[in-house]
Length: 165
Image (cartoon, rainbow, N blue to C red; front, side, top):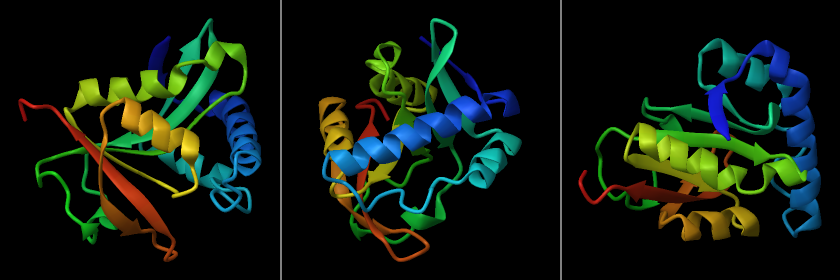
């Protein structure tokens, strides 16, 4: 697997992955995250434009997509709980993988890549997103508290830091 910046040519594959992710979430007991077609194509186009959208390829096929940035995230300013530190961090949003066999392990691969870029990563997810909660636990992310999105929805916030940070 490889990680690379997303290009506009990747949009059809990415939007298919997000459609599959919405369906998978609903089927696994998480029908309230990414409703109404979220994330919409306009958001992904903006992510590409500002250089924060990445894809994971396996066998020359896009198998996962995510947003990654190392500038402070406004939704992480207020937390009911506490972050592990206040150092510069990377943030991951909108991570999703395809449902085909080529995508097995892609979520972990993407998150590990992010951690290689900066050994202090924050991420949030819906309380009903059992597969993501399991992945975060398996990769050593620690629960820090609850944050709120711009629309008021709450999310569980996690952080992973290197012991050397």
